[in-house]
Length: 303
Length: 303
Image 1 (cartoon, rainbow over the protein chains, first blue to last red):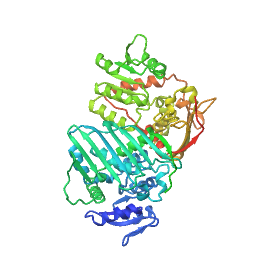
Image 2 (image 1 turned 90 degrees about the horizontal axis):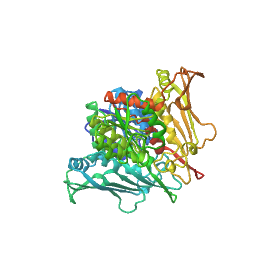
Image 3 (image 1 turned 135 degrees about the vertical axis):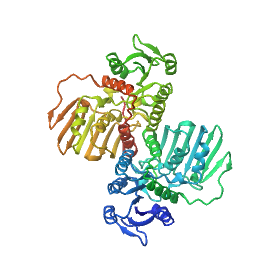
Image 4 (image 1 turned 90 degrees about the vertical axis):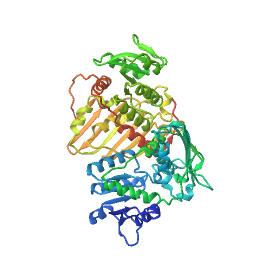
C-alpha cells in the first residue's frame, strides 16, 4: 500500500522514514514539506496538490505539530484517504472529535497513534495487570528539554503543552495498561514566568497514583512507571521498554521491531480491517490537568 | 417517581425545589445536605445513609459543586439509581467518562444537564439553523460576578472555571443549535494576579464565531448569541430566552415552564425510555480553552 508522509522534520527522518523503509506493508510514495524531502521519493510542498496528483496513494501520515495539523487532516479525509496522526492527535479535543466523525462518515481509517504504547513492555504489562487491582503507584518522567527539544520555543507557548509533550507518553502507557479507567484528582503546574506552558507538573490520579513530570532533568533521564497491586509489583522503565515484575526483569532479549515499525504495522492492520483507533484518554487527562491544575510561576526559562 | 435532591444550597432552593414541586412526574422524597433542608421532606446529611434507608427512591439529582460531586455520583450509580447532574457534570472530563460507563453498565439513566439549553429560544433556533450554513457570529456573555456569585472565592480557584462558569452556558447553547460541530481555534484568558481562574476570556471558534466572556460587567447584563448564515441572521438574547430572526422578534408570548421544569420533564422521559443524555461538547470546549489559551495576568480581584 502506498503512503505519503507530511511534515519532514526531525521525527519524520528519525523514526517514520526508517520504519516505512523496513515495512513489508507500506511504500513511501510521496512527501509533503516546505523544506524537507526524502531521496528518491516524489516531493510536494502542498498537501492538496499531492492529494490531487497522486490518487494512487491510499494513506497519509501526518508528522506536523498539533496546531497546524487539523487543516491537513481534514484535507486528507475529505479526499477519502486513510489517516495516521502523530501524538497528540490535535491541538484540541474538539477537533479530534470532528476528525473521528469525518473518518467514520467517509469510511476510511483514522489512527491516532501513541508511539509509547508500542514500547516492548507495554503489552506484557497490560496482560499482567488484567484482573489485578492497582493500590498505588508513581510515574517519574524527567527529561532535559534542552537535549530533546533544543531551541523549540513553541513547546512552551500556548498550546505547546510544555512538559506534557513527553508526559502524555507516560499517560498513554498508563491508560493502556491499567485494568480500570483513571481520572485526575488534582494537579500542580510549574510555569516559567516568561512562558505559557508548564516546565514541570505533579499530578494526583485515582487509585493512589501520582505523576512527576519534569523538563529540567540533567544527567540520566528517567521514564519510569511503578505500580503496586493486590497481586505484586510492576515497574516499566526506559519509557516502557523494560518490564520488572516483583523487582525482577521480565522481558527476554527478543528483538522487537521498535515503536514506529509497530505503529505502521498496526496502521496496515486497521486499514485492512476498515477499523478506527482513536483513544483520547491520554489527551483528556492532559486537558483535565490544564483545566483543574493550580499554577505556580517560577523563574524564567531560556534555552 | 421519587427523587432525592443532594446539596441544598442556593441553586437547589431557587430552581430545583420549585421545579420539583410543580412537576407531574416527580415527588421530592428526600434531601441530603450538611446544613440545608426542605420543609416536609425527610432530610439526611449523608448520601450513603439516604441510599440505604430509602430504596423506594429511584432517582437522585446532584446540586453539588463540580469538585466534590464525583464521589456522590459514584455512590448513586453503585446503588442502581438514576442520576441527574447540574452543569458542568464534573470537575474533569475523565470522571464524566467513568460515570457514563458506570451508568451504562448498571442500566440506569445518566442525565448531564445544561439548563440553558432549555431556554425557550433554543429549540426554535436549532430548527431554524438546520440546513443553513453559519458564516460568522459572536457570543457576548457579560455579567457581574459580585452579583451572581457574591463572596464565592471557589469560583476563581483552580477547577472553579472562573468566567467559564457562566460562559459554559453560552457554549451549551451554541453546541446545541449549530448545524455542524464547532472547534476552538484559540483563546485569551485574563487571570487576576491573585487568582487561578480567568475573570474574562476571548475565544476564537470555527465558522468565524468569536466569544467574549466577562465577569466584570456592571449595569445591564448581556447574554447574547448572534449568528450570520447563508440564509439570514439569528440572535438569541437574554440567555436564549429571546429569539430574533433577521432582526425581528420570533417567539410568541406563550408561557413556557422554564429551564428547570423542562430539565425534570426531560429526566422523566429519559428514565421511562431507559436512555442516557451525556453531551460533553460544552465541557470539551472549556477544557480546550484552558489547554490552548494564552494567559494574561491582570490586577488582583477581591469580592
